[in-house]
Length: 376
Image 1 (cartoon, helix red, strand yellow):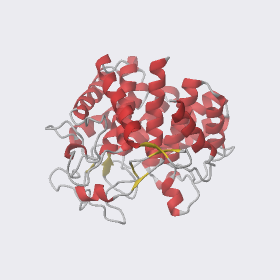
Image 2 (cartoon, rainbow, N blue to C red; image 1 turned 180 degrees about the vertical axis):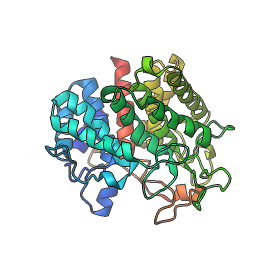
Image 3 (tube, rainbow, N blue to C red; image 1 turned 60 degrees about the horizontal axis):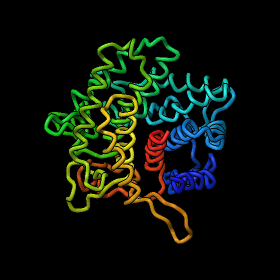
């Protein structure tokens, strides 16, 4: 456990707001890091470290990092509402906590700015937000995590819960349209228009069950429930909770004996498939937090602990200089776009596998905070 905290400190020491060492995509592109979901994942995890340890270094780092990007009037460096990219909402989750902890009014203004994007996101005919303006009529599981917990927290805190029904219905649409009844797993994406080359022309669905997408969706369910006023949500709250429990049950059927899950979940053992860190970390977090919040029974805790230890055993390593690294992280995966990503099995195997990227480190750190809570 002490080693993991040393690892996090090393990442923080080597990072600046413009060049965080954990944002491998930006480093590979040679670009400055502005407002993005990857840094949002990491800063959210660092704030969780502060919440559980109360060590000021975590709060100072998170505050300094976000403070640099948020101007006095609440505008955000590198963030354009009109881009209508659902990923960009994710980092907004850090603003609630930082506003509460620091009282900086600019964070409150920035929260309203991010919410203004939520209010104007284009929607599918079913009523779900598009994943991005450049991906019309498409719902990706990833996007539920990027937006819905922020949306729910804003509605609960600042908007008199007026749009609760909208949030719940977007989840219910995903369950209806993207869940495979045979496995209980969810396909990565859905094209409501049936126009994209990667989708089934009848169902609108992509071809495979990608681990990290299933993880994002698991966290979307869990973190949205966590930000909901249950007394104001009625039967919808119980239905969403049931969707979460059923997904955990479905995922546990595919948990490897190592404790981890495979990149394409249902094809463990197939050539090129590998145990993947980011999605396994998210599942560890979801199971452990689900038990802590009372959504899952105590018996699920062992599966979450097994997942966490499996990641440590398989992918936490020390280099010749004594520095820790977390490997086995799929750098990125998506559908369509300029590279015409087809969502085939071979496609998911073709994306780079890297070390120390926040899409793995952030969820791993969140799982670690849940492990720390067990000791409290």
